[in-house]
Length: 433
Image 1: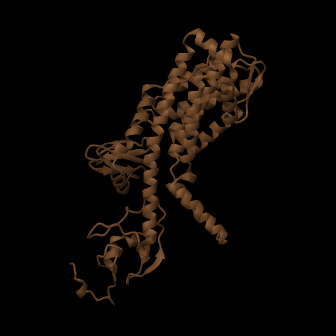
Image 2 (image 1 turned 180 degrees about the vertical axis):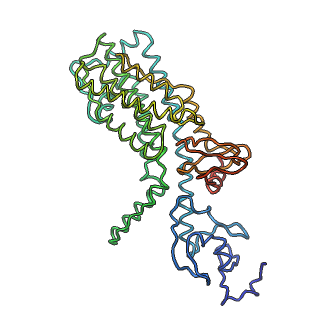
Image 3 (image 1 turned 45 degrees about the horizontal axis):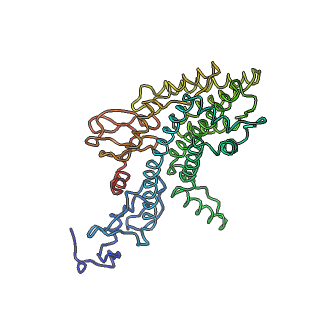
């Protein structure tokens, strides 16, 4: 029952006055701010210990005055709770922003790939013109880092609009990759500042909770997109060189070992992060880079070993696709056909650019709509967010679109491991998207 200020015994029940001017008792304010979720308290209401409040999205959103809804951000007693909520809020906004920025890059990449395919099959006159501008008087060494390879090709093809467009897109993808890096995320920046302050004070404590809140998905997807862009540039350039000589081009020597190593790093991290889609992409591009090298190499025992290793990568990709083919949505949708195409590339000497298929396009289209749903938000057992449409309550089982773990449920009851993300849902609705 509400009491007037006159009726409150301040010795027994102290009051707090936030910036809005409304008076609340300490007990009421503690309950409103969910103090018991962050601190262990004794029977007298005093704080005795700190709970682990570092769980991602553990705060229930920014609290406001129960009387006038004014924000409660400047009360020192609750500063830890407020900071937790602010970090969560910034991270949610980052998720939305990263998703919306990524889709246009994919769309542009698909359009440029389609144009490059048309150029490859277009008039011989256009091909001859492009080839004459990039014809080499001596051997070209395409090796070293991917940045070095593309920089060299860019220098040789600076007069061609085709390469200017895709190399320009590559620069944008690289910039976006830096922006979605964990160190640039809200919590990543705070983590680095805290660790730096601890080092200066001689405190050696590892904040192991960092990994849980940082969002690696868009970085992994953008890493795949950058590899895809580099493959398209290398493929187009080599096709032009082969047309210029009307045979296997002796003017280009390739060593894509660093490209393959970076694919292996992508595979390892994607597997550890339970991201089957990018894991398969890593296996596919490992084999594609081998196919590019094979088109210029003479049969050697060392290269035969690379071919065997490429086939092993494709077998692993097949296995992952098989494990998720019956799931809906399938995080590896459309990739089985790509695996079969790369197998053909390894069997023959023809190599070509991947064609975007309808299933894979549907996956990206679903990503574009992920944050526009009218249902409710949940987290799967691996912490990946997803939505349930219609009434917003689980009525059937399905799979997480990122890792394939069980989600949904029956009769408005979620399956084990699934938890509501009401705070995430509330934040997205407040963003007006």
